[in-house]
Amino acid sequence: MSLAISVTNIIDDVDLILQLTTIASMDKHRNAVNYENFGARIKNYKAFYVVKEDDTYLAMSGIYQGDHWDKDLARIGDRNYYFPIARSKTLGFKAANGYTAYNSDYLVPTQKEWCLENGITNIFLSIQEINRRPALQKMLKYQKSKGNFDFAMLKDMYYTCNEKYNPNVYNPKCWQSVISYKGKDINLPKIPIESIKNVV
Image (cartoon, helix red, strand yellow):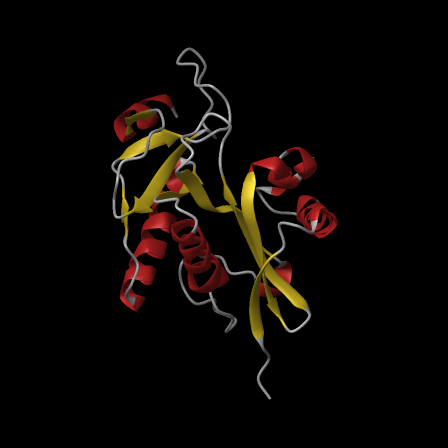
């Protein structure tokens, strides 16, 4: 008997979000710090989704709007996390252990549809560190192979942190590669990718 996959918006269950992000913050992975003190971040989420296989949590991420962003701009796949049982070393392909790429197959399409249904048409997904840009390209290729995925890679790097941009301060985690819905430019500070390469 096959197990049932569910994708659920838990934005109204703050206790559950904090419980799950606390687990993520204690995990031994490169982005564990992103899940610390998550309570201060919840106010910026329009939705927060979990993928479960019956009663087992597999993955989670949210739809995020920065305080200084346009109201029709949102990042999907924000704070994407795979629980250890579902973890793959790639962002966009089927996992070697037989599990599905839950972000690509469930979270991203569901969150895109939520945005469109709620009047948000400037939708993007991003990844930090320039050396991880190929992972985003792989995800894009995977999604397009399945059809019905109207995103494209933008050529510049974008400042995605939730703070007012200060050109005199360089924070490498804030400059991220972006894919956007229908390939539309997004209203965030941007710099040519070559500028990042010259700094890092």
